Image (tube, rainbow, N blue to C red):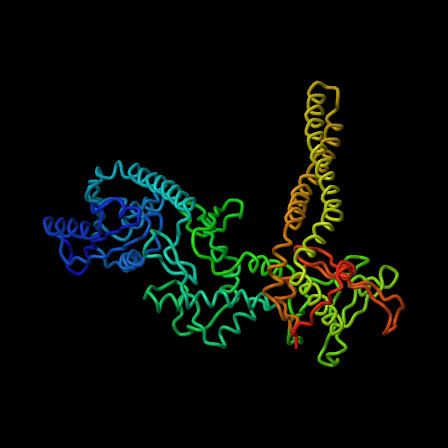
Length: 555
């Protein structure tokens, strides 16, 4: 008969994997079995505790922690479970509990289905083996779950329980998602703010100030479902990490990324991120919230963007775009509260760091550069709208000369690198054979093989970069229509915004003035437009047309 002053703990556990199998392991079933056993065997002062939805390899369970607190306080007479697997599926920890902890605390342990009762020593002979098989079961279940998750990812199904912010569950499609109108607008706004030059911290401050519900609180108010990071005391507080997660999520393109994270093992549940090459991306699975054009612009801007100095109220409009035409280094923007805004200027990074012996200043005022770019952008987009056929003809002719020349040169470099890579592989094999046959000493083998390996590694690092560059050039050769479509969308460009700037322009190169320190001397500014390249000769093309350009309403 159990001591009335100490508890008889009836403990049950159910994991998601157990639940898939049916009712045999359900909490209700376990409770009924445990209570019946306690009643039939005279165990009194019972206390039923259970953990629902917890893996057997995880011992950090709420009710199990309560059980252990009672055990350590010597308030437990007997602990009864359905079988050893309900206690856990990690054989070392289960063995420590049953053979060290429970006996030292005077706890009688019973596993009904396994016939284990610590009061009778003979019933424990096969307990270590049972614990080991239970752990193998957990390992096997983990493999099966991973295989199921991979198949779901390959089908483009959502893997998590909560849809990405900006979407909700699709009631008509299993594991599908559709845009959530309210949250979707916030997602579009976040991408718009980023395209306008604001970083994640700045965007988070804007959303916080405007009292926009953060993702966890928005989901909680919509569904009532909690989340580990939910803080209802500060529902409008956005963080830079939340904004960054949205800006990095390709779900908003209408694609479903899968297997982005995994766990270290079936025992260690710490989340780790998969490399992008190991992830699965299924395209066009649902309605997109942003365009590919917006995505590319934001990703490029975030790669280029530098941290804005604290004394600057506004980020650099041209961040990452303006370069020295001679040395290729960026031009650095100089401005301060003690300096008038009209005097803000760009100078060559090389000149500032290494002096005039290496490069000249390439000085240009920010205000002047803005006006030059704005005027040229209006000129080029007007031409693209008004003379579509002539514009396309000019670009295609230019592509056929300049672009094809660069593409051919790059292709030759690629072919040469690939041939040399194959040659080095053959050389290394012959060198190895000569070393084995004694024709080459070990020292010679080490020296030559090290040189070959270094050269081959450099080649294999360079080849993917050249391939990506060649593909980019090939894509740009056929994007005249894309530029014309953008020009039609922006018929009256009143001011130069970061979004418009990056939508149309990929690079700006500033030359030195023909006469140093002269305010009126000519200065070359080369503008590389997205999709169409450099447009220096547009006036020459349009000269053949006597019809003058119509003045657009840009006031």
